[in-house]
Length: 80
Image 1 (tube, rainbow, N blue to C red):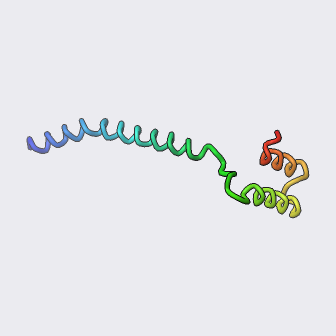
Image 2: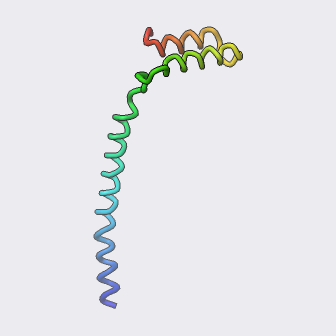
């Protein structure tokens, strides 16, 4: 009975520590992931051209309007 009570007490003490460590690990992962995910990888050869061509295909198919296409192209080219 004493062993069971000791284990329960130990578990009660460890739960807040484990939760705190988990929260720290999540925060670190978000910060590191956010720093990596913040920039759009436009330095890859041909990526900008592919994205512009995709916009042209969407426009040709009638999925986006002239204004939407122009706005998206401007954002991609950094002219807004």
